[in-house]
Length: 284
Image (cartoon, rainbow, N blue to C red; front, top):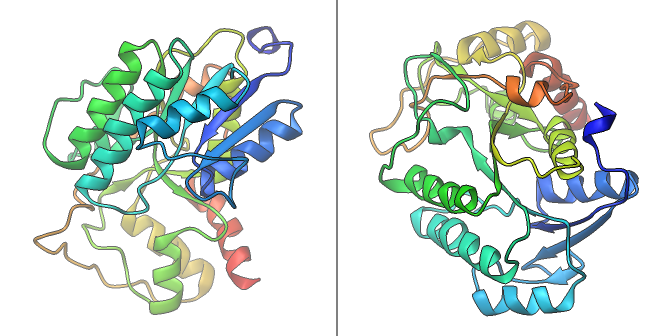
């Protein structure tokens, strides 16, 4: 494994310092690397920059040392299609134009697969152009891949201070909408950080697609049964999906075997392992 890693410190530019980007910057710095951060909120990063604005990104490129790697992990914070278009389509184009030839890692989502029958999915599974936010993500992925970059498709990100399923269940006793037998793919923030840290510090740029989920997908009902036994609370009743819902339809089991082959190993192999970390943070 060590033969795959670079031997000199790297300079990594992280675009977006939210829940994931901030933790990644801390991890890289602890590892002896230089993590440059850029965000629209100047209080959250070293540099103020708007990824959706081409002029802003060119100004950023002129101000910073040339990075070895660029990580795009900005978030729409639950925005709709226009927010996705602005961030992923325009933001990706702006980044590639402002930093030509630099290796780029785009943090995408396993939602692009859109599978509903519970089958196992690897990176070899074809995704097809489609309308809506999934389609915009796929377009952004294709732009990065065409430029020789890397796409990391993350499962549902959770960790201390962030888990909608746990917060709704613990505070309101309600379930996420959708069938209880549908498969959910989670990834703990700390495991996501470790995987991205690894990809940033490989000797050769990690071109292509990587699924970033834990080892063990769980069914929604299985998760609530586990939490019910753990907390001594009644399991919530199933909640039907509203007609206008945009989430909750997929049921797929995502394989992370390609990342595992690089030597990455999740600290939390399943949601059942990682949820204790979330509950401890809630108690505090």
